[in-house]
Image (cartoon, rainbow over all chains, first blue to last red; front, side):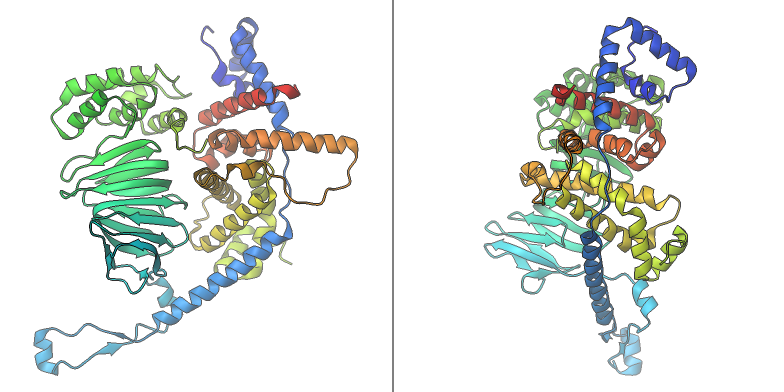
Length: 371
Length: 183
């Protein structure tokens, strides 16, 4: 065995290798000082880590859970009571009005508990925590609910509390519509302007639609702009976001940008500190007629962190160019176990995800990550 | 007491709003959740308690969606790790990172010298582990505190076993470097 075995030392120490593999690694360790040093370091780290231990949770944890479950049940009961309130039905059409003389018509939604639970129920209204200037809103007072709109002019802005998971700042000259405030989906639509979101929630709970894509929160903070043509620009400042449109997805970590243009394919993510030439070539490739020359420039200009851009490009370029991209990525990272160059050129889904998992370590080093 | 009831029976009862079934599910799984959070955050008990409460609240409120195609424990581990990472990000964002290293205001226990030294070492290792990036920290905690196999870690962390191995390897080596004065 000539190549180093550092990526197998963990498996070696945990006896997860076959007898033959184990013998090969062992023989290599005898002759290779570099791998032996890595082996000794890892072994020392393991000895230390073994002293970590578990403990039972103190009784106060269950007491707190019981108390909060009680609150949640009370809120649920209140929602069900509201759902039973008489609501006006839609008036019949003109022909029917002629027949029944436009009689007012009311129905009970239902008093059946099961049916009420299955019907989509919007969550509580959100609070507009702060305003500057005089933004207009179709909500009442300092609250805003699903279906309502907030609009700012050049001299106004607003801050919305997104339930208990974070907040959204609506910048001047922006229009935002609240789509859903439910427990399972918190969603709004940025029709134009800019918003800044800071969210701490399970992935995919918070979504912002724009005319050209949707931004799906994966645990993050970001700024989203929509111009007068409906084109979007996403800048992630913490965590990561998925920008999605028509079944395509760009995975955008902190420090990176991604654009989408109405009627065009989804843009490729790039880090803000990428070279100007890379950014220009990427825009030509994504939205212009850059073609092979643009791809060559992007590959040539890419450095360590631009593997973010390269990884996404693998799925977008002709097969003949994929080998060059993989070769560039290999300048910065060894392929993970089980991932092959051929597999990546074939765009094998599992190998692509395994490669991304390892590349994320390079991307995380961008300021703003949680290291 | 419901310790003899199967997990699936408890889940069915929990879905119907049976609080005692919730409590039994909590009793069976609390140690794993609290232990992971405690070691993830350098031994900070207050944070581990907060995380544990959030984990079980999410679990109970989402119980109706549990498809039963994985064990409750796997699901809880996944929620725990995700919440720990979210909490870490929140701390960084609001510059609360120093909290990790504050001492809990607890009455000291009466312990012998050998135990005292072991506890000191445990605390030092926990704090060093808490300085690692979460992607390296999570597999270390799951392996050494929960004794998970590569397959289990891969399932909980939603990564391949090869990635688990490489992250464990780097995590162990970084830990050894941070605590080189102890070797």
